[in-house]
Image (cartoon, rainbow, N blue to C red; front, top):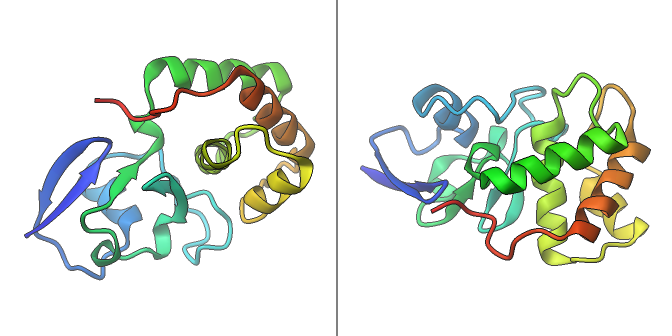
Length: 158
């Protein structure tokens, strides 16, 4: 029996330790905000935070994250989600929206690490997040705007 801390809730799971976190989140816990796309850790749609660092949940087995804090898009406080939605809407940073949970989680990790990111910081942090709609400049603008607004020091519910 393994213990996972997901969105500040301790969850006991009896599951194959090689199971990718993505499937635990989606299939076992019903958290479908984290998206499946490439299944190889190349596109970033499945990005979640592990101890505030972005990881690709589709290639991260749960055995590698026992006793670590997992944060999904569903685990963000409502006021932060509202701020993100407002910024993303104002900047047009969401077209089809499929990649957005991964984009948002990577952006939050960046802002946590570097509250005033530069173009280079953004390009580096977001380089693994692909957008089929190609709105990278709007996403960059949204990240700048979100950083300017500021995010709470503790982005976790609970």
